[in-house]
Length: 455
Image 1 (tube, one colour):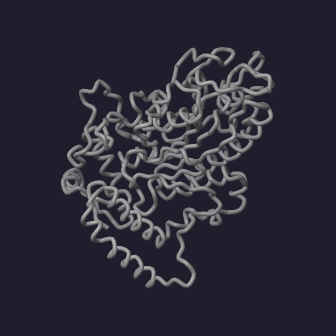
Image 2 (cartoon, rainbow, N blue to C red):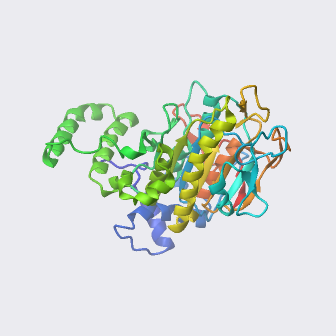
Image 3 (cartoon, rainbow, N blue to C red):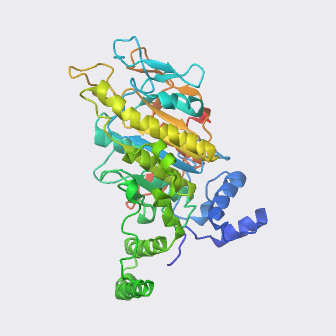
């Protein structure tokens, strides 16, 4: 496979010289995965940038653009597990209960392991982990439509007909590379067909979409009766047939198509393929996450970040509770509560929580007013999200709504601010400009500012 400055294992000669001048390190074969990480951290520590600017000519830093957002020179987070509650999770019935208020309904608040922090009774297991999490009650959005809200949360940009912006996982691999050259840099579980994925970024940053986590990675095993020799002959024949076309049309999209085959063949032969096999986990641990697709998807996320996949998103739908909110929300929260609590406990026991940022997000909240169908409608003015691990200080609440949950009255958080906070925890460069194919400049979280006080 041809290498260029965008390839996951490419090391620029100037970067090599710089590395050797900083310190002498003997890289072993097993240490190859950390080589890119070292280069990134060295640049952050000594030059205050995420990646040396001369190594990647198509990027331009944001100096002089009036942004100048803070950089995290000592990030703790290496990976992200992103739990997305599709449909609009009710803040009043989860992280921002209003017992006694007319808008609170029957949902009561319970004490947690964090002094002074109360959450809804629908999350009893998570209450035991509140000392690990930061609850964000000041979230607000500019759109109350599902598709547009989902897109905004994933990209920090309003949806447009002329361009698709990258999601956070694609931004992460573009700006900081992959750690494991065999596995994909980002994975989306149960993401649906409307996920923005890599957007306008090259296909090398496309997150891998996984449907049923219990089925492992499908279509990646050799057909019965097909030998290794026969497989190699078929690959070589395909390359010969494509050679003239590839040489004549030496374009990014054509090269990406060829690289896709190379990456797939490499993964088929790799031991890392076992990362997708949940049967490798003890039965008791699998049950602790829940036997539904979401719980098993969260367990898969832990297995993947354990093998240096940078960003894993798992979606749980069903939060669009226009009817029977007080029946349907407890059903959804039971699934979420079990899986999220198991994840926080599992990561803590394995010593992985400090380097893994856990994000819980949704596109908007639900109306404080309860409709005639005992439901809550779309409400972008105020809602809640959550962060844990990855350098986030646990046991805290950021943002406040009024006594009925209608308005953010303190510490307002817009969606680009949340995404900027995720990037800050990872040490990603917030002001680094990436150009779309039409040469329009974009940054990771638009103009969002990170909540550095949470770390």
